[in-house]
Length: 110
Length: 116
Image 1 (spheres, rainbow over the protein chains, first blue to last red):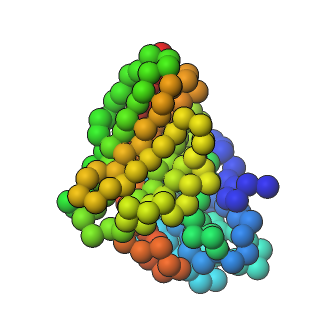
Image 2: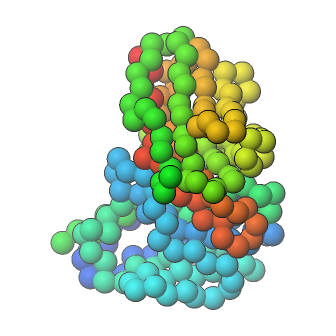
Image 3: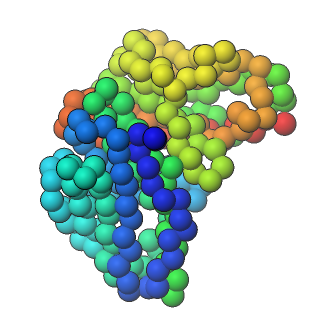
């Protein structure tokens, strides 16, 4: 089992819809969780971080963490074509490594 | 500096040649990470440093890859005798802390290595 798993996609959603991106992790002791966005040919940039169970909202983005089920998700409301990118989930696991999932490619079509 | 600086941006090597990549972390950041991103966006952890000490090297291919972070010098990732499958973008990231909170990593622009 990989330490951090994501569906590679592509996930296609129409403009204005909610995009839901999911990530599961194997280390139950993980404490910090991050979502990075990577545009094609660019470096990843941090868009959300979450540390405790529940929801964290920032503009159109909501991160959700469920430690009991070991998953973290990212919701993007009112999706725009400019949101089309690869979204990387990163987890700070118990052995002090920052592990990335393979990324989910999101396509928002007009 | 205020950003992670990676050089060169592009590197082309013939199979069997040596490749050396450099990374200058953000000033004041103690932790440096190297990742390899091959096609289809798979992001693979290679190695991390805490200052000049190796923090975690479990992702490093032992035989041909080596890395250093020396005081007052950019960190480096060296690949001896490159192979075609080493073609990838190599990202460096730095972070100020590696405890539960604030593990945010900032990325450089990457070095695209092409082995021909």
